[in-house]
Amino acid sequence: MPQGYGLTVATNAPAIAAALALREDLQLIVIGGRVDARIGASLGRVAIRDAQAIRSDVYFVGVCGVDAQAGISALDYEDAQFKQAVAAVSRAVVAVAADEKLGTAAPFAVAASEDLHALVIEHGADAAQERAFEGLGVRVVRAEAVA
Image 1 (cartoon, rainbow, N blue to C red):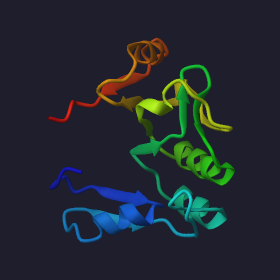
Image 2: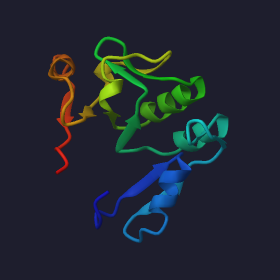
Image 3: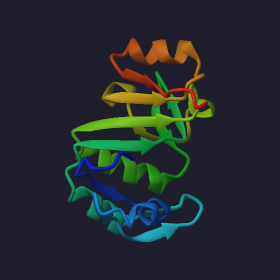
Image 4: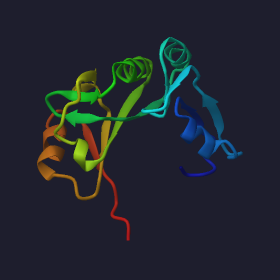
């Protein structure tokens, strides 16, 4: 994350919180609740309540599946519920997807593709997937190649 922007970062992931905890250039909010070790995040009623109290400008959501027709999805029911709750109170939703997630759908729906403000994909991602999302009005941002 860039430094010096005066960001406020809210996360339900302890690993992300630990990585950002010593940054003096941002404000860190840790969303609480029961931590699911498989997912690496706080989930459940407490986490959803905490998340709903924050009105995010931009919500960067990691996805388990992202497909132009099926939307974004999660492998875990409580994870999907949490992501739905955050998306509902955020001004913009940006999905971040690794190549193996593109064109796939996990069992639990999070949001429709049309609800995305943008989709961040890897440098070498399938161009057909990119076009499918752009056809729905989703801005697709292709990551730069790492040298």
